[in-house]
Image 1: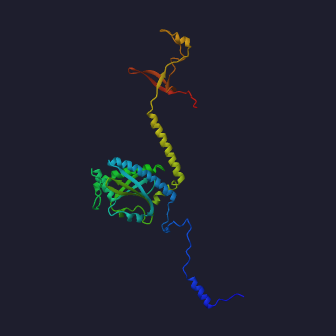
Image 2: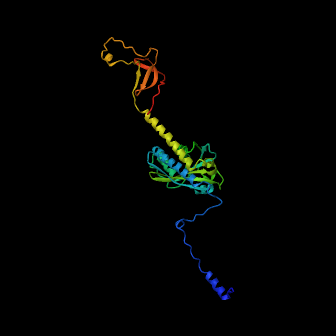
Image 3: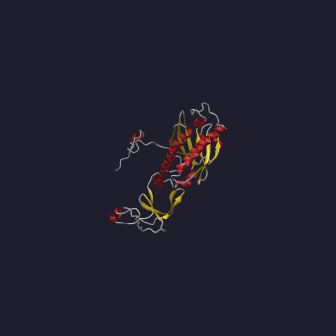
Length: 329
């Protein structure tokens, strides 16, 4: 027969159940992991694989910008990739400084506008260096003037050129400026809640350091995201390396010197006849007077030509390519 618990026993069980819960130890895989918040209203729309491709593209852009700006500023300019972030457009606008130097540009054939934002210290440092200074930033914040904006256009044109070249490793784009804005509130390229990708590049020059930020709306990059898989990036990088190697070989071959000779006629004779040749002897060749001259490049027959003269010098005129085939081992 089942035992029926008394009220005192029930109260004792309830008291014991009120003790603190036993802590369940985390597994080794979770012991060092941090809890991250996830916003279901604004989920990450770009995968980690695509983020890595964007990082690779802009690391290449940063390297090229470092060389280009160093030559332009006549000083060492270091450009490093800081981060690639997915945020809303409203968050990006609110993160801009009080007096930014902001440009919009297009990336044809992609639709929509993108943004390039220079921090005030960086913009004033470039302007100061372009006018012969030490590249100092401004102590007091103020709006950038029209003359200073025109100077910064030269800097931004360099950035656009390197950006276009960096993206060309994946697909061909033409980066062209659209407008200049001193007030970020007037830069409305997408709705406030739209997802954007922000590339942060840190630029250091002499006595100034600042950040250049590229903002790509998701809807602008969406047609290109399918090409941003790791496999496509590997194939595009490999194809670009092959094309670059071929061009390097061509450039190296253009500087190579070789012997070029024209063979007017030829025949085969015995060594006895050769040793008995005297002045006035006539040697019959196997070449007719109407036949073209053979041109040897490095001892190999390559072209057919017609002999003649140019000024006071003997010359040949190339009339065709030799049809003799040589076997390669």
